[in-house]
Structures are given as C-alpha cells and as structure tokens.
Image 1: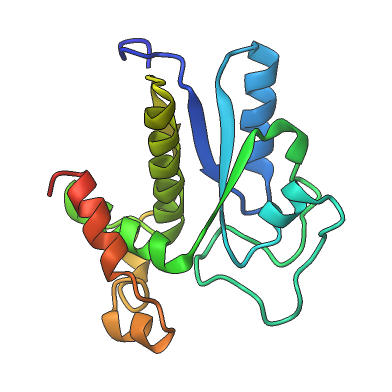
Image 2: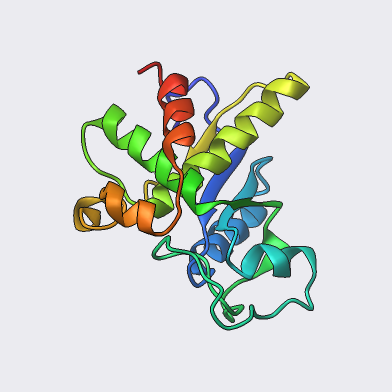
Length: 179
C-alpha cells in the first residue's frame, strides 16, 4: 500500500462469518489511530447488520438464511464486536452473485460469493465518497476462491431455482469494470 497514491485507505471492507476478522481489523485500526474506517458487508439474511443497528437483535427466526457461504449468521457470534465497526452494509444475495460473476470475468479466475458481497459494499462506499467529493482508497479482501461453486453460484439453473435474479447486478459491475 505504501506505493499507492492513497496509502492509508479511507475504508477497509470485510465480511463477517464469526466476526473475528472484522474484530481484528477494527481493533488494529483503533490501536494505530489511522483515519481508516471499517465497513462490514453482510448478507441481508444475516443477524449481524441487525445487531449493529440494534444490540437487542441477537438471532433470526428459524429458516432465515443467506445462500452466501462463509459469512452471515442466524445468531450473533461472541467474536463479533460491533463497537469497532464504523458501518455495515446489508447486501442481497443476488447482488453478491452478480458482483462475483463480473469480478470473476474481469480477473480471469473464479471468486466466491462472499467476495461478491464485499465488492457490493465497496461500490456503495465509492458512490458515497464520490457524492461527497472524497478521494481515497478502499481495501477489501478477496476472501474466497470460486472453484468449489461450479454447481451453485456458477450454475444458472441452481440460481434460477432459488429465485436469484443476478443478471442486472452482473451487468452493472461489468460496466463498472469497463468490460
């Protein structure tokens, strides 16, 4: 990052599986006293973003859940520390899939759904920064490869069977990447 134009990022974006990654990054930012803020991208069908907004929200009803593996939970995990998080962005599963597919095409290798979730949050932060005239960098984690999702996230029939309409999001992210 030291060679980047903006070596201290405005934002770091990560997902929350157990909350350990966001807790570690958030505490590091606080200890280093950087101006960097932490945004956690969370599937819409997860409790974490609800708990961030209202500490009384501790779990979701049975049957609620996201198809995005590795992030989002039906109950708050002990390692999730909302006090070190500056913002949470709830992301629809279809948006995660669309972003994931567009990024995979751009990179020439498959990434997974939680990477797509992070990318949707990055795009929202970029829009917000541009609207306020703020320049700077955003760092995210490409947290999962997509090789194991050939029968799910990369299978149109599997997605259609779950009612996930990801096409518009894929087109929007492809346009953002200039592809």
